[in-house]
Length: 78
Image: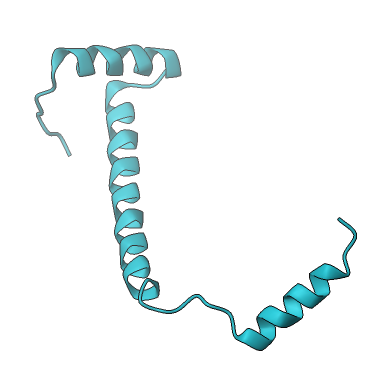
């Protein structure tokens, strides 16, 4: 799909330089950049939702498990 967008001059110049360096067309560079941005925003939203769910749960260990771990570690050579 063709679209027309406006960019600040410094951003446009940087993108042009990068496209030449990567030997990509402007369209390829912009498409990849937008896909990466959209993908990272989706991942961020998932992470935020997971943090909201797991942020409510206690992360404390069961006292018996904690004791067993400490007991085992005390036998290790550090």
